[in-house]
Image 1: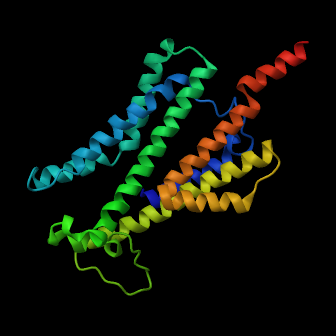
Image 2: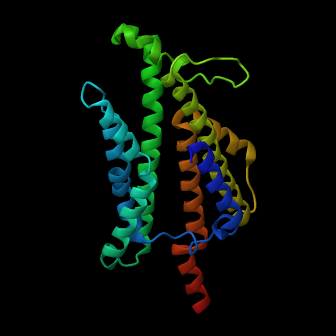
Image 3: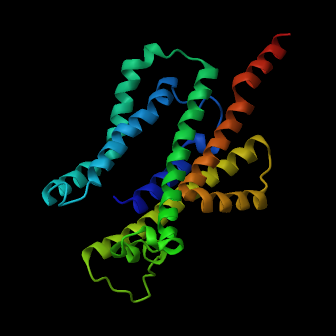
Length: 256
């Protein structure tokens, strides 16, 4: 399944079936501390390593056959991350006792890592592409056309009658739509969870301000970066208002 199909489907199922989407609280959204501690590293191993192997130039540094094998190995990277994280959970759990402060620190580290990864890839893509217009002298002439913003980011409309000349160009068209639809689904999912949490906990959502923030974040960090930021803010709100120090204060007050 492609990103454009699987991601909106999974997000939609989560919104419709999970209590964490409808009634989030500190208990039902809590992630084991050990998972928070190891997840960035597991992502690095399970995703970044296969990705780096996949992007090695062929045939200059690897054969075409090896390139195809590397691409095939890269495909199930979510399974690698999931399996590695599960193994780490069972092996390392005894070394990570429950601690709210440490768990919140781990949660912020996970979100910061995800936000940095999404933002850096978004900015690097735009900076490199825009540099071909601003300072074309930095690039070899044979790459200027391929890296031009109109070539990299323009979305060919299905009814435009555009025809591809090579398989690579067709794959490029497909991947642009794949990313656009999939990332839009992630952003809509995060926006929904954010708004539901605010309505439930604060009884209000400032839609004009929220939409402006989402637009600015999408421009600066990309749609997935914006989604990460919304989820980060949502989780911070849920833990602050329904758990942790606030929950302890309520318990202390009741005991008086």
